[in-house]
Length: 168
Image 1 (spheres, rainbow, N blue to C red):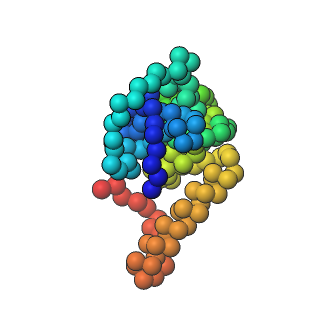
Image 2 (image 1 turned 90 degrees about the vertical axis):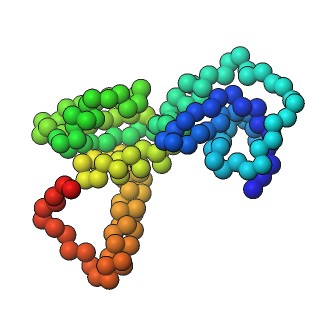
């Protein structure tokens, strides 16, 4: 827990949670703060002006949603059943979609803050997989292995994998 004085520039709702983007006097830079993690919020009488050159669009330019980081090239492939869903929406302004001969679809984008993209890819199950970068793919593999271990521990035995899945 730390005390921070911030100049709030922008509020944004992402996946049901509010975030404040503003200048942090302690770090002396623009930062992103999760409002649901704030305690004892106090409004001061201090005034400030948002810098003329600040643009929230530029600040979040490489973000998937709100998480920032050094932009990296990410390549994700989607199977033919997921391709229409992916094709039907603009997911990120840097995205390039390529149709593959087998009906699958490849998305290439430049993005920072890979945690959000990792969770999105994992939410699509076996219908999406990361081709690049290697470390993001390895992180997903580790998450999936850890999840399988928990399912096996809960069942008290190794999980038998079905040959077919039924949607319910």
